[in-house]
Figure (cartoon, rainbow, N blue to C red):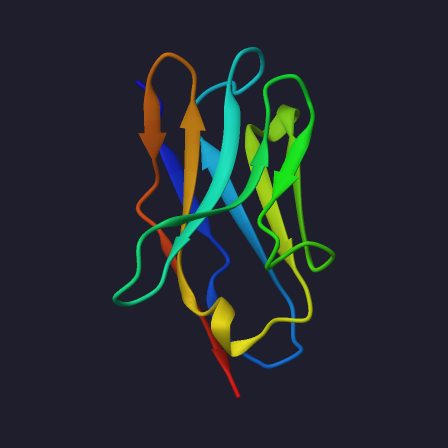
Length: 114
């Protein structure tokens, strides 16, 4: 079983930055793909950024150039650096780990004020 705990959400003004962290309860080396998803009120959960197990990354078009995913294997932690935030980035952000099983964190709220 893998436990994921997100942190770093909060309230920020348009144009501001936040860094989210996802701490895993054990090593995330090897075959795990790690992703950040978000869900805004009344909308479906959507992929924001994905770090494939092979090391490549993918981003949603809406965040390309503004968000960066990274990982610190020594700390079993994945980060999402979010810059130039917009009100439409407001959502609950979830961390996801996937191998043959899928694990989710509890989510962290990000609110961007206009």
